[in-house]
Image (cartoon, rainbow, N blue to C red):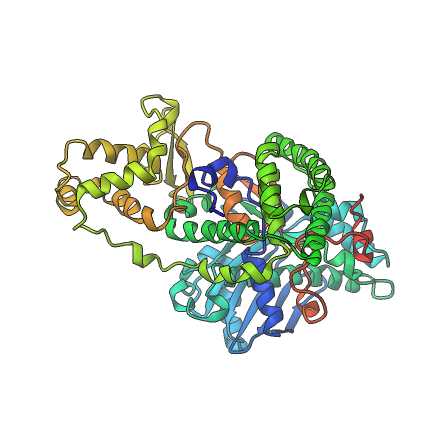
Length: 564
């Protein structure tokens, strides 16, 4: 069984249809927390009746502890914004390495609420900020205070009490560099500190609304029932700032996608599934189908994709009912059928569903998803130009299909905004700033390199070539990575007028484990994180990895109002 080729997988439209899977970083984290019996404690809760104050959540593992330090604020509604340029928030957070004492808490309180304007130390691993989803937060508060559970349909419509507008790590604002903690087992997989931060912020958001209800009406207030409680994830608003990550980290992107493709290959190679594996797959299809019926987006493109997905699930059920799962190698047969019959959205959701019964086959691949990118930084100057040309001919043949002589093919340019140091996209022929263009136009730069190499002797070294043409150093480095990193490049023109940046955002967010993608434009998207997951205090009582889709027929599901 072969891996799917990069020419099929690495198109922006397909990457923009990826779904969360067993290999997503949230799910890797919760499996570890469960397996290693991490303990959680809310050690500080100094929040007043107006929802202002601080709280500390401590997560203790086998070797060390981490603490989410949360600051709740009285935010003027006029200042509430999803934009990264906001300067005030309903809550701000830091993930602290260890357990902070009072001196550390005072230091954090003086800086964390300021975010960019503050100063933090290497004891902080992540910084974050969040705003309330005001209508739902207020509704839940009022209902709990009155002794009632919130309206299930409203909960389902929004899905979170708070949404983050940024979760920063890896040295941002002076926090700890990735290299300083990457060797720790619990943080070695990508973005584990960020995923732990989000997991604990979600708990804080629910604790906050229950606390305010109790303060408002101590005689009648109730807490959320467990099934409804789990329907609250943590929202997030993500814009263009995330998109260049996939382009700037080709080794990491390769390792993420290669792990996912290897997992699919292993599952497709299963000759005869056990009855338990087959039953689990059928159950997850039904659960995902029900979940798709409650997935909503006002964005025309995503709304159409959801409608197609709902229809494709019906076709999938019919196909399964005709006996395809009774064949030898049924998963391979099902995938091949889907590739010819279903939309990209459904094809990639099927890939994720096929992985669900096979943790014993694929979970080890999570260990391959990190990357030491310093290993790929040096340029091999001793390589011959002929060898470089051969790599270009083999791995970058897709570039030849792009006609860069047209205005449409290079109408966009990527730059970094002066105001917030965040990536942005400009219109090359109608906006100023082209001189600030970032080297993210991979296809165009490959084309330019090929043209520069045309007149070079094959026996010439790369070092000699770069002495004469230093402007190509960044793209030569990328080309030399290609033979060992086949999934490192998005095989599309990323400065074309037709580019949909949300495809890049969704690809990265799917590896995080995000769900309910809801684009607000072609440049930013809202998502949900950890929806349906157990809370920290529940991890010891429930399965750690059976939450990616809500279960059917359970008491929790009925409370959650997922309608068949």
